[in-house]
Image 1 (tube, rainbow, N blue to C red):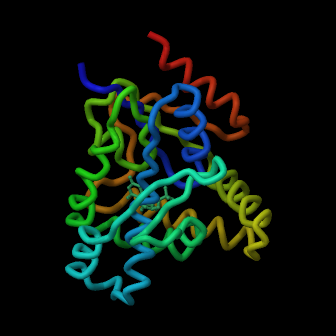
Image 2 (cartoon, rainbow, N blue to C red):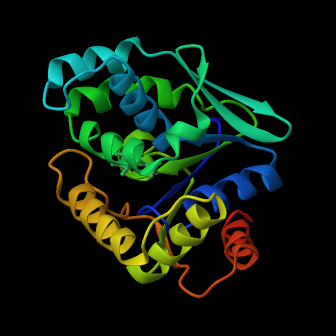
Length: 220
Ligand code: C5P
């Protein structure tokens, strides 16, 4: 039988990352943070001084960039071309670069097989925008997480403030709305729930509640 996959898609700030990691931990399954792949290409493109308006160069970069995932002291780290880029990957600059390059069809194609390679026994929790629609259309369970834009901006604001990054709530809300619009309106793999996805609105819900709801879907 095919190795089982649970896809968790949704917009930034919907809690996907936290929920997916926790669910993978509880199931003892592997975890794919597909956004980190796009961010890694964005960061590598920045290091190489590539022009975000030069698709051919970005596609080469997507094929050539080495991306590895490791655990250090229980924390997931992302290694890009041999360098630990975990902190840089989380910046708004990396997110914006990722969103821009993710709109290029050949970049998405370049990452397709790499993402599918994460499907290993005993199972995979795949977190992203098109996990249920494009990368793992045959997944046995699909979840689409949402939350109001205001709540997503607040979550992000708290995260960044805890890290000592200075941002305004208003600026974050505007960035989130702009990124949502770009991710939902792009021609290739736009952000949308798969027809067979279960939608969970996480506005006002705690992490444990959402994790329990997702795990409840996994019961046969
Ligand atoms: O999820 P995360 O915020 O890390 O993703 C960064 C960007 O990468 C998103 O804004 C989106 O444009 C892109 N992305 C994508 N497809 C995925 C994961 C991320 O297009 N499966």
